[in-house]
Length: 537
Image 1 (cartoon, rainbow, N blue to C red):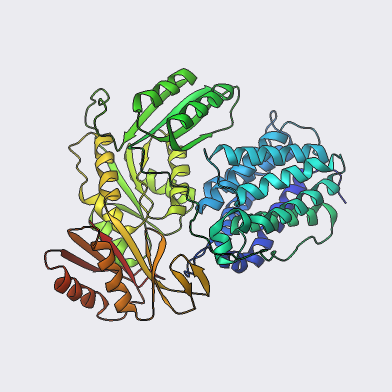
Image 2 (image 1 turned 120 degrees about the vertical axis):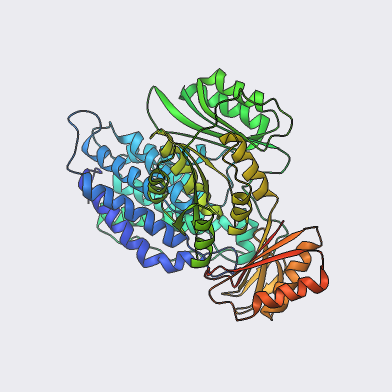
């Protein structure tokens, strides 16, 4: 048994944690709220920790003469590698946990039980700090429980404290369906939380030489629920404000309170430097001036970006900048070709932070718009944008959730406009494009549209199951009807790699009969999992 966490133990933890995640990858991927065949939390965590291990392997022999201790240096390499390789929300949150963990113990001579408990609490705080209104029943809840369990052990005995943390995390994971209705309805525990439990079990094994792995807990109940917790913010607020801020941490605490009172979708993430660090601030508000003033009160805001404004005074004009570019995440050869034809740099689906950053830098442009086309990739894109700012590149992320929204955004791009105005126009075009996905259920589940069985056809509108059918063509036509019932002038259809011949022709013919004044554009998308993607503008 080890009584301290040294650099060698950090290396073994990273390696064994990665191996454990690979063993449980399929299981974690299956812990998906909706019964669609693209669950990838396990895969994202594996790829994130793979990058962390690579950073350790490449740089561990570069311990500086002054600064962090050897274990602190190793943990910071692990955290930085995880950030650059982060994929999906789970990967980004894990990188924040590791950053907080590393920051807490970097200067501590020896990491024993109480120091490890403090590091877990710091990691949990860093993860929670990145989200203004955390949703319980997720990875956040599980890491907080692990920290509480470690603190409750109240001991310098490192193995005892790690065991307590792993037990508390497992217990919290078992309760996640009671906190998130979507998990209860699907009869699963949180996938990201399960991944963290795997990593804590690996740490127990490294420190004690004992196997601590436990099977994923069975939810206590699988009760149906009418609502699903959402993290995307409400439509009540019309403006998105983003800026970088040089400020002390104590001032940022007041900034968070001020911005939280003004709006929602608040995210404030820092680089960990002391006493004054650089913070990336994002919030949705109605009062843009008040949001910027809150930043001025806290420190020195710069690179201020405002989107989706209606009648607020415009910022002082600036010259139209040359050297703009767009980076788009695309899965499917046909979709990639459409974006390339629009002059965008295309990145394959599910990229890491580092891959997106490389794509942004490869454009050679000083101002870049990133279109992530997926909720999980949006978090990765935001992390890449923060890194790009450090290289002097201004990056704005337009939060597209589907390729059809990105096509709508690129269609209104105009290099003669100010960059900020162009981003606003693209965001408005994307937001005005409603989207749907049609796929086959991969497992039995209870959805808001009723129960489904493997092989059933599911139509998801804006990420929510709206229709369950047995015939693919009929379900595709029905979801288009439902969406056009709310208005629309143009329909975009993207056929997937597994779409049967004639699917888009049949849907086009149906629209011509039922909605004769609606324009239809159909393309071979080549995307996996989804035979049809639909956009309504």
